[in-house]
Image 1 (cartoon, one colour):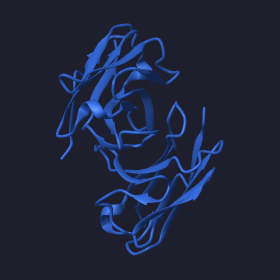
Image 2 (cartoon, chains in turn green, red):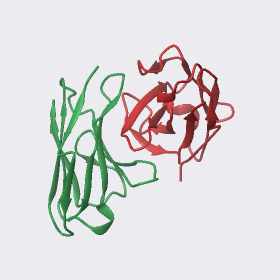
Image 3 (cartoon, one colour):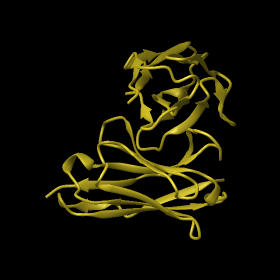
Amino acid sequence: DIQMTQSPSSLSASVGDRVTITCRASQGINNFLAWFQQKPGKAPKFLIYEASRLQSGVPSNFSGSGYGTDFTLTISSLQPEDFATYYCQQYKTFPFTFGPGTKVDMK
Amino acid sequence: QVQLVESGGGVVQPGRSLRLSCAASRFTFSSYGMHWVRQAPGKGLEWVAGIWYDGSNKYYADSVKGRFTISRDNSKSMLYLQMNSLRAEDTAVYYCAKEHRITGSQPFDYWGQGSLVTVSS
């Protein structure tokens, strides 16, 4: 199985900050990488697919990059509604696996 | 707007069975692969099972293989998860999720609101 790791596990930031989250796969997954945002008590929200493609309706302050085993999610200017937990997911091979999550909270 | 509505969750004793359902609407259900993902209280997301658009192929996490069965009824736009021999560690919110596109390996673009399953004596 492909293991996914994320760093940091949590971070504190302020509105307007630039935030970067890293996701690493235990083996190459090309660009079969998605990012999700989840708020407490809510279902995950689909943000990015194919490592860098923004899902329709997702604000342009979100961006993704990477290929192979190393990926990043960047929020260029953190907004109040962006405080949440972020998960990466590989969908190259079953079982599809998620990273453990990165919680972004208010400094 | 795509709609996915799970039902069937509840409290069940260890070793018993439960069937979750997911009613899909506002998209061509029979064209898309579908999945179940769960989240234990306070924990991260865990993919559970997936099924091709026509039901011809099914995939399971090792943690549920042999105990859970995913199925679908395209005539009713329904997805199911039959859960047998339930264990305390199966306690979680279970989400059904739709694949983003109809071809190739795809992430999940729409999720239901979730159905809580609690396994406890």
